[in-house]
Structure formats: C-alpha cells, structure tokens
Length: 392
Image 1 (tube, rainbow, N blue to C red):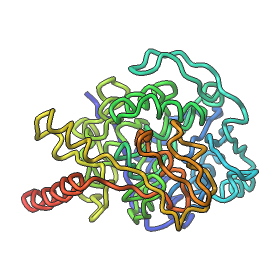
Image 2: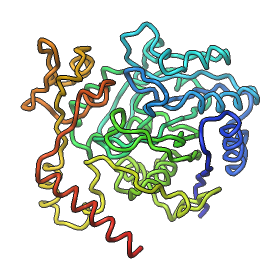
Image 3: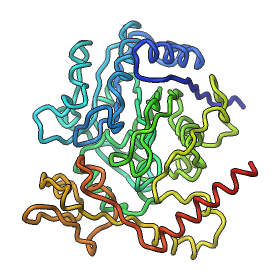
C-alpha cells in the first residue's frame, strides 16, 4: 500500500526568497503543484485568521508573508484565486491589522470575509451533525487550499489543518456548537464532521513561527522554522504534532479522522519527505496545560475521567488588563461572560470551559487557572516525559 506523502522543509524566517524556495521544494517533493491542482482551476484559499484581528508577529494568524508567496506561485500557473475566512471584527475591515488586505490588494486577488457571501445548507452523515451551513465559495470552487498555522490549543490540545476548516461555517454556528459539544471528544468529532464537508486538496502549514503554551491566541510565539505540506490534512497534522512532542493519535481530530478514513493519522503509514522525523523535533516546546496524552492510555478509565475534570482550565478575567471591549461577552455561547462596570467577569457556575473568551481576548485579560490537583498532575506528567526521554 502506497504511503501518504508529507513534505517538510526547513526555513529560518519570513523572507520572501526563503519562503518561495521552500514552497517550490515542498511541491516538488509531492510531485509538483500541477499534479495536485489542475491548471486553469478555480481555487479557494482558506487562511487561519482568528478573530479579533491581530498583527502577524503575534503568531495567531497564518503569516501574510507566507500566504503571499503561496499566492504568487498560484498566480504564475494561472489559477483563479479567492482568499477568505469567516472573521468577527468591530473594525470596518477586519483584514487590515493582519496585513492581509494589503497583500491581496497588491496581488489583485479577492479577499473575502465569508459572512459577506452568506452560507449554504450542507447535509451530511456525521457523528455529531446531520446538517450544517458552509460557505458557498468552497462548494463552488474546483480545489481548496488550506493554510493553517501551527499552534497549541487550550481546549483541543493542538490546532492545525483539520481544525482550520472550522472557519468555513458561520460565527454564530461556531458559538452554538461550542455550547452543544462542550467536551473535547464531542467537539473534536464535530470538527471532523465539518472537515468532511469540504476536505482540502492541498494543505500547507505555516510553522515558521508557531504558537506554544495556551494557544490559539494567548500563547507565545515560538521559532520552529518549518513548512509542512500534504494533500492529506490529517497526515500533515500527525507529522506536525509529532514534531512538537505530541503523540498524533492523542489529538482527537487526528484520531477520529483516521478512524473514519478521512485521512491518515498513523505515522507508520506516512512517508515524510525532505526532513527526517527525528531531525524536526522542536526542543522545549511548551504544551497547553490540558495536554496529558502520555498518561491517558496508562490509567483506568474512571481515574482518567477524574483527572480530566481536575485538568479543566477555568477562565478568569484579569481586571487590570481588561479594557471593557466586551469581545468575550459577545462571543460566550452560554452567557457566562458578563459586563461589569469597568471589566468583564466570568460566571463559573455557567461556564462550559469552551475557551471562547480566552481565544477572543487580544489583551490577554482572560487567564486560565487550574485546580491544585490538576497542576500536580501536569507537573508529574512533565517529569515523566523528561525521564522517558532519557531512555528513548
């Protein structure tokens, strides 16, 4: 059986000539861009543009310099291109701060906030969903290119190519699904349902500067210096998550997509091209506090359930940092984030720990706390990793 291909190329920074060459090399390793996407095709490029808008150096969005080089290569071949994501912004143009408006205007490529073109009902036989609504821009395109950012995630542990497709549905529906599927297992199955509606034909991950810690928006930039590419988003996520010290099948979107044969999540079935898997391991990459994959398979189910409960991160507003922008109040799917006189407040009795408030706060005013036992488990897990690494 032929293995799924994932290309990995090293790159030092966001200089255009370096990105260009790394992309050319990546496509060559995969057999050439035109072997994946037919010339003359209509392409939709899905970026990772988290709301609210942020500057590219914060490592929250797919870097516009990275996207620009992808778009230039596509233009050279002659594809018809549209770039987009569904974003919420109190600014008139949510793509200004990130630099995307400037890039797409320069290249004369349409850049669309998906809510502007509406959404179309899509029926499916998913594990969680039987219908949803997705952007017609994807349904009407010949090919989809997915440009995720390598980041940790305080709810799903890791966010990559599969989860990036969550942005093809409306913002309001995303909030509703957070409320309905408030456990990671259910939420991840739902994410795979969404992914199954429009699987990308090519996935190219910006891991030049990634995000570690409490991602996807409140973590810290981490120089990783890699670009991953593959027609298989699941395989790409498997290789990328392995490079930052995670077991790919501990990432539930990877595990469930693999089980449902929507992609390949098992490393032994993946051919890694360009760089060896041992050569791309990122040292001292900080995971989210919720990542306890190593002990998940080594303890009884009842004990794992107890530990999972203890590891739940509790959002709390740092009053001195809060600017009373009310973004967290607007996005909270259950009304747990409330307006106070000068700062927001989280009602813990209503909170479902979906981390939407944490994700949306650009001022890092929503911090995540963990119960004392949870902090102890995290410390022991970290120690276990270090001890086991000495024998690997």
